[in-house]
Image (cartoon, rainbow, N blue to C red; front, side, top):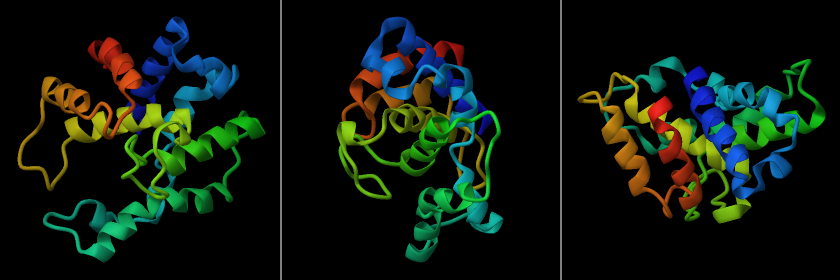
Amino acid sequence: MEQVGKYADLMYQFMIKTNMENVNVILGGEFRDVGRWIFALHDVGRHYIPFALLNKVGKLTPEEMQTIKDHTVNARRAMKTIYIQPFSDEMMLRWEEISVYHHERFDGTGYPEGLAGEAIPLGARICAIADAYEGIISWKPYKKKQTTKQEAAEIIESEAGKQFQPQLVEAFKHCVAEF
């Protein structure tokens, strides 16, 4: 999860420098100080997924897939028991948005709510790219072979306008060499 925080924060910092998507206004100036940690904590709801299911080799049943998907809404449940001292109420809200909505897709086919386009909170749209990239390049017991960073970048780029917002894919392309 820490790598996701690093990748998303690099994209966020690039977006600030280029004033892309008015990111500093939308996420708030305080986000600049804590954004990397908020991005890194995006999967707080995975705590509710059994370890064996996370590492299952083979096809998931519909019930197992739903358990995986539920980690986004379970983030709210987990966050009710957590308060991180340096996070203001506004930053706790940003953390919740990112944790709950980072599996929404720009074209509206994601989960948990099927949000599309700019209805998906900006932090979640940024985190979605970083999370997908990390998921693609990471070793998993159910993956047949390791994906190279170049192959992963090409997959992300091919999802512009579908899974990911095209402008954010452009930010990714500017930052991926630092990943």
